[in-house]
Every structure is written in structure tokens, then in C-alpha cells.
Length: 503
Image (cartoon, rainbow, N blue to C red):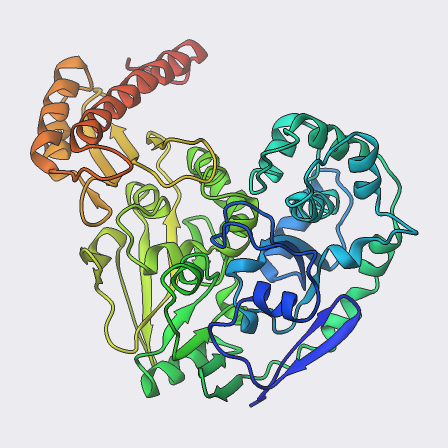
């Protein structure tokens, strides 16, 4: 058992033995004099606090990197660089990592290529947001799948907001920086693997402070034993939700287990049956694997938060917190996902939709935690779609999230229907009456209208700042119509290709 956290700040090794569980990385950095990292929104939205966190690649990241190499791209290094929001990263989460701020990437005497491009192409005016932009741009310049495509750059920078300059000069600067040779910062990164490896002692970490207790388990086994002894422990993976408890609700966190260092919870197992995704796997790490078996879900993930949020947020964390407007659960429910829970040495599994009992209440027993979620491969005849409706395209909470999966037999009759929604009830859930209206019927406009009518019986949504009840009910029915129209287009495409005998 270790009683300190250790990480690199730039090239300096930091060892801390008095770390409050609710201390944010941003507060600590500014206290350390790293004032180039700014506090803006303090909720992971504006990007002024952006830093780069470097870690040795997890097994799921290595697998993904090998896939990129097999498609003709160069094999990346053993270290991954991720842009993250320092305002909602809790300091204990940095154990075993290297943190870089704007002060690390360049100097007045030797600017980084991103900084040079921002100056040359007038990418900054007031400058408050500029350090955060630079850090996101440096991270993207070192990404495995970097591209000078406008859409890819826009996605990479969607977590950074600018209200002075406008984005066109910044995108031009990004393109220029992508073509520049490596700088001294990139050369330093190449030596980082060995230094980070030296910090990997596979030890559990426990720190007791006057402000609360910190536990960093090295394995799921350690976490399981800890939660039996201390069942009231708060489990934190990416902190993209819990971070706001601290910065907005001003809540204290008396006892926290941070699971980001559990190597056996950071795995993605891909089999003929589908995927098993561990509780510490981030959305960004899971995105490529999920897109292979559920292409539409892969597209949806690109609209969950921003790249820095997806670099921290976990798929299972989005499930575990039970939010009725979480984007991941409805898409997974429609896919027929199974949730795996553990308490001590006892494990159980249940269909994902059964986990959500009521608002703020889930089927998770005292001392039990979410260990993984399994996502099955869809049948060849399954038509699957997921739709997110929100006021903004990026970085916005859904008003309605709908995901649908439908199977038909050779006669064209519907044999399976899973219609899942977020934002329509107190939990993510299916629409049983609408599903019943579909089963055994031909998939035509008459059946569609019956299902639309049944949706009104399935849900009584609330009105809030994101949408009115009428809007939600109307949009839910209209999304089912969209699904129908898209499925007809798919049917015609398959028929023309000669791969469908019944239309």
C-alpha cells in the first residue's frame, strides 16, 4: 500500500501525501504558479483550463493503435497524449501520469509550432482562451488519427470556445501546425515512456487527510474488497459529472475510490458475440470498437460532450450515475446490452434497462459496483439507429435521445423491436406499448402510426429548461417516423443490391 500519489508536472516529479479527494487539478496548478491555465466556466465547457495528460497506453488503446498500424498508419509511441479539462479533473486522478500546461510546450525563445501558427495567422485577440486552444491543438497534433480535414479539426477543438477571434484563423493555424516538423516538446515526449513506466508499481494507494480519504485501487479485486469494508465510498472514474458536484454544488467528497488505475477495468474484450467494455474505459477509447459493431452509435459518441470530455468520461460511469438524460444508456439499451455488477467475490448480470429503477435509484446493492457492460453484435437483419436532439450540436445535454433496433423475418413481419429513450422519463427506458404495437406486424405506415400513438401512452415527459413536454412527445414520435423512412431507404438499397429477397 502506497500513501502518496506521484506524477510528473512537465519534467518535474511531484509526490503528494496530503491530497483532498475534492481538490481539482486546476486549483492545484494555479496554486503552483501555473497561471497560464485559466479558470473560465469551471464545468468543462469552455476549454480555458485545458491541459495535456500523458499516460502509458492501456491494453484497449494498444489494440486500437495496432489497428491503425494495420491500416497503413505508423505505429504510435507507447504514450498517449490527451487534452483534458483541468477544472473537473480531481488531483488524485493524476497518479502515474504526466501533466503538461502551456508553460511546458514552448517558450518566448522557442515557440511551439502551434504557438507560431497562432501568431502568424492571427489566431488570438484577448488571449484568455488561447492557452487552452494551444493545448488542444498540441494534443491533436500528436493524435494517432490526426487529419487536416476541417470536420476532424472542428471536432478536436469543439471543447474550446472563443468569443473574440472567431474560429477560422484558429483552424488555419491548426492546419499550418500539422505540417510543421516536430519541436523540442515532441522530442521530450519520446523519452516519457520509460519515466512513466518507473511509476507503475501496481500498488494500491490510500491517503487519509483532514478533508477526506482517497483510495486508488490497482485492480478490480482491490476495489471489491474496499467497497465491502467501506460501502459508502463514492466511485469516480472520469469525474466529468462528479467534478461539477465540487465546482458548482460546492459538495465535499469525504471518501472516494478513483478507479482510473485499475488496469483490469480498462480493457475492451472483442469476441464473435460482441464487446465487453470495462468500467474504466473512456468513451474515446471505446469509440472505434463500438463503431465497428454499431456504426450509428459510433457517430452518436462524437456528439457526447467534446473530445476532452470523451477523453475522461467513461461509458460505464454514464450508466452508473443513472442520469435520465445520459446519452449512452438508451443507445446501449436498444442494442440489447447487459450490465455486469460485482460485490466482493459475487458477480451478477442483468439487462441494462433493468438497472434503472426510478429517478436517482438504481439496482446496485450496498458495496456493489459496475464492473463492465457487454454489447452484443446485432443480427444481420437488425436495423439500428440512434438520434440525439439538443439545442447545440456539440457539448449539449439532450432534450431527447432515441435509439431503435428492429428485426424482420422473411415475410417482412417484425420479430424484435427495442425502442429506447432518454429525456422522456425519470430513467432511460424502453417504450413497451410502442414495441408491442410493432411486434408481429408488417413494417408499414399503418404499423408506424399505431406505434406513434402508443408512444403517447408510454411516456408523460416533463417540461424543463431544455424542452417542453409537448416538444419531447412530438419529437419522440417524429424520430420514430424518421427511423421508418430510413429503414425504407435501407430496404430499397439492399433490394437493388440483390441482397434482400422480400421488400
